[in-house]
Length: 331
Ligand code: PHE
Image (tube, rainbow, N blue to C red):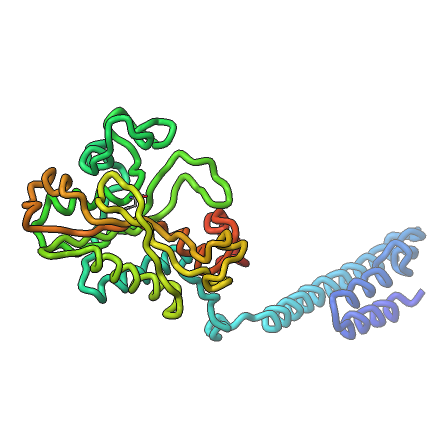
C-alpha cells in the first residue's frame, strides 16, 4: 500500500472538513477500526513498515485533533454571536399592577371626606374592652362581648369588632370641633360565606361641634352615597338601634337594578341597606368629659366590602381575598 498517498489523502480531507461533524467523519474514515491504516497496522510483520505506518497515523491523528479544536472554537464563536442578548435593548414595558378594590374604595372615601374638611385618623386593631364596649355604652350582657362573637386576646383585650373605638380615642385626645374619618380592619368571629368574612373593613366618621343636627348627618351621608354609587341614586334613612347613637339610623340607597320599583336583588323593597349611623349619644360625651349641653355630633360606620359588592355587583365577598387576577383586574 502507498502509505504516503494515503496520508496525503487523509490530510487533504482534514483540511477540507468544514464542521465538527465532517471532521468526525474524516476520523472514522482514516483512523477508525476499519480504516485502511488500521487494517494495514494489524497486518504488519516487519518493524520498518510498522514504524512508517505508526508515524503516518500519528501525523493524521494530530492533524485531525488540531482541525477539530479549530472547528469547535469557530462553532462556539458563531453560536455566541448568534445567541447574543443585547441587555441594553428596552423591554416592551412592565406589566402594571393595580390597587386592590378595597384600597381604591378606602382612598375614595378618604378623598370625599378630605374634600369636606375632615381629617383621616388611625385607630388600633387590638383594643381594650373599655374602648370597644364600655366607652361605647354597650350594656354588660351585650352579645358582642361574648367570646362566641368576638376574638379575644385576654379578658380585657380583643381584636376590635368595629371602628367605633376610634370615636372615643379621638374625643379623649381632642376638643371639639372634631371632623374625622377612620378606616381599617375589624374582626368578628364569623364563618366565611358569600356575605361574611372574619376580617373586613369599615369607615368610621365622627363630627362633633356646636349645633350639629340629624340633617347634617343625612346630608353628609347623602353626599357620600352619591359619590360612591352615582349622582342618580336616591337615598333613604330609617330608624335603627346602636348603643352609642341616639337616635340611630340605617342608610339605604335606591336599588341599582330596579331603581326602586322592587326586584329580587333588593328583595322587592326597592332599597338596599348600606350601613349604620346616628347622633352621638350624650352619654359618650359625659364619658370623655365634653359638655353635652354645648356640643352635639353624629357618627357613622359602614363596611367597605359591602360598598364594593353593591357597587360592582359581585355575589361573593370572598372573591376579595382570593386574589384571582381575573377578578382583581376588573377594577
Ligand atoms: N359600629 C357600628 C357597626 O359596626 C356602625 C355604626 C357606627 C353605627 C357609628 C352608628 C354610628 O355596626
